[in-house]
Image (cartoon, rainbow, N blue to C red; front, side):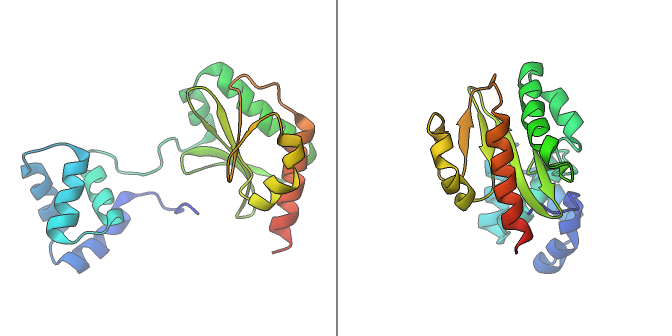
Length: 186
C-alpha cells in the first residue's frame, strides 16, 4: 500500500541516523558528482555508502527537485495529463462500477487512479501506449470471472482492454462485487 505521506524528506532522519551525516552533506556530494544521471547517482549511494534503494531514491529524487513521490495528487490532475479520449474511457469504467457500488472512493495510488473501499483496492487502471490494464487486485477474482475475460488478454494479476474500450458494465460490476466481498470478509 502506498505511503500516506509522500514527502521524500520523511526519510531524512533515518538517513542521517544510519549514515552519520546531515542530509545537506549527502546533497552536496550528489551535486559534486561528475554525473547527473539517475542510475549513477543511485549506484554512488548504494555501492559506496550502503544506502538502501528507498533511501537512495528519496535523496536522489529530492536532489533532482522532486520533493514528493506523489506525481499527480488527485485523479482530476491525472485525467488532465492523459489523452482526453483515454480519460473518458477510464471515467466510464469507474462510472460503471460506482453505478452499483456507490460507497467506493476514487483515489490515486502508485500514481494510478483506483477505486477503493476503506483501505482495500477494488479496481485500478493504468494506461499504456496501446491498451489499458485493469487490475482487480485479486487472482481469485480474475479466476472466478475468467470465462467472461476470454476475449481479452489475461495476465497473471490483470487483463488488458483497448484504449477506446466499449465498457462492459456488467463485467466491471461483477469484478467489483467479487472484490468487495473478498475485502469485507477479511
